[in-house]
Length: 145
Image 1 (cartoon, rainbow, N blue to C red):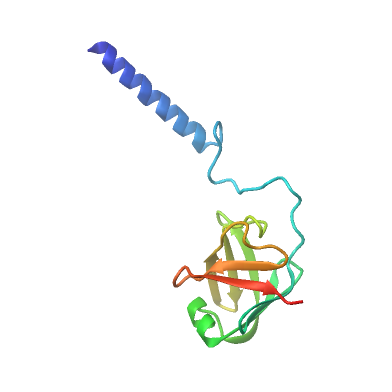
Image 2: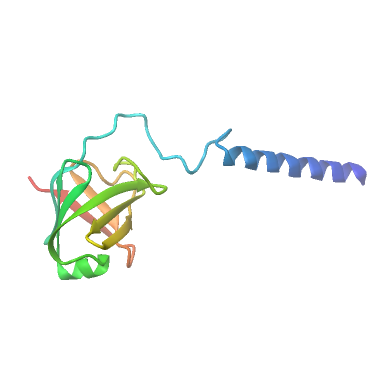
């Protein structure tokens, strides 16, 4: 009976040690680290990306964007309709990150800000997508020629 308790105690201590190691980034990896395939960071987004009558115009500085949103999309994103200047940031675990591996993008126009989840790998220099915060529907934008 005592041997059974020692085995159980040993298993519990091992599980606790492995759990602590993973919390501090030792051993098998840390789920809070941003994904990165080791490739160079992509150039900042530039140009106009369209989805139906909606557009996002990135000027290449990695911060500012001109949004032109229909009433419907603006309502769903809680941003102003029509053309407006704003900022954007691609995020991983609330820190700024490269757009091709980001898990979210935040658009801000004046006092309005919206966080949209992304599908890592869905955005590059020619196309991009994010999930609408009201429904999770994925919306695609493609770069204008």
